Amino acid sequence: MEWLHCISYFFGGAFLSNAIPHFVSGAMGRPFQSPFAKPPGQGLSSSTVNVLWGVFNFAVSYILICRVGEFSLTSTTYAAVLGLGFLLMGLVSARHFGRFHGGNSPAE
Image (cartoon, rainbow, N blue to C red; front, side, top):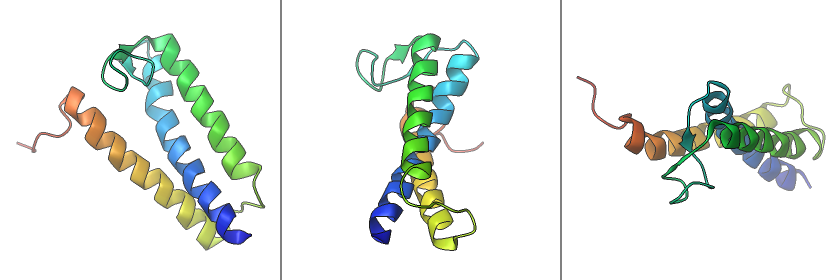
């Protein structure tokens, strides 16, 4: 079923987008919000926790994109659905994390 593949690719893009800030912050040795902090999603987790969380998200995105169906970047539909999931998760992350890092203030 192609629509099930599209759902998988959408969420694969979302997990891929979520992996990047966690992995990069952790690899830079910086604490960052994660679901394991207190309170979840608001407090800071260690850099090690964020590297592990980022790698987990990369693994889930790999499974959803590469192991479901026959994903191909030459398929406009599949690439667009993956890109949409990536974009929407990026926007949600920007709004959420912007509250803590000053990213939601208007440009001066």
